[in-house]
Amino acid sequence: MYLYGASGHGKVIAEIAEDLAINITGFIDANTSITSVLDYTVIAISATNLNGNAVISIGSNKIRKQIAIKENHLQFISLLSPKANISQRVVIEEGTVVMMGATINSEVVIGKHCIVNTNASIDHDCKLGDFVHISPNVALAGNVIVGEGTHIGIGASIIQGIKIGKWCTIGAGAVIIKDVPNGATVVGNPGRIIKIKDINV
Image 1 (cartoon, rainbow, N blue to C red):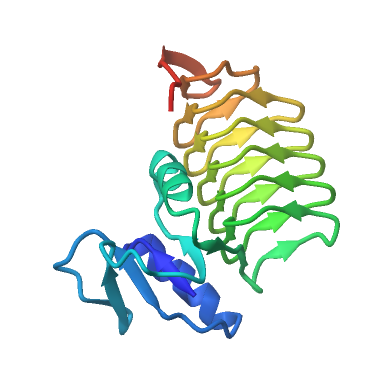
Image 2: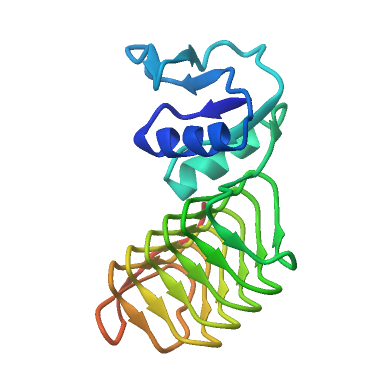
């Protein structure tokens, strides 16, 4: 298995793979000055003949989407930490990673190439679109919908039944009590919109 992105985020994903006894062939990265990460070889992106299983180990939602489209010859797999608490009734699609201490409850649906980070809590019946990043210590109450590409910052809280649009940014520690439109950046408690961007990604 390859990890696409030789970063600190990649180190965490590598240790999940180790916990699952999955063999890591190496990291892939555009930065040729990086030769190893955690004693694994870093392979140049220019080695286009790479094939096999892979996980995109990059935190940026936009870049993960670009790589998933560009490198569609790779077989993307999910990595779920055995130290996470995941209901047997959860659906998790390809390329998604779930970090240590995360809790995902019954009938949650998580799309492709998402990140559910350390100690995040996702309660029953939530739905996450593709390329979403749920940061450490985020709490989603039940029946929350999060659109494609949205990043929910560390420690944010979303009350039950909220719908968050595509490619939004929810600031660290924000408390979301109202629906959020596509492309919005929301900060504070209670959350307030400070800008809305074009979401042509």
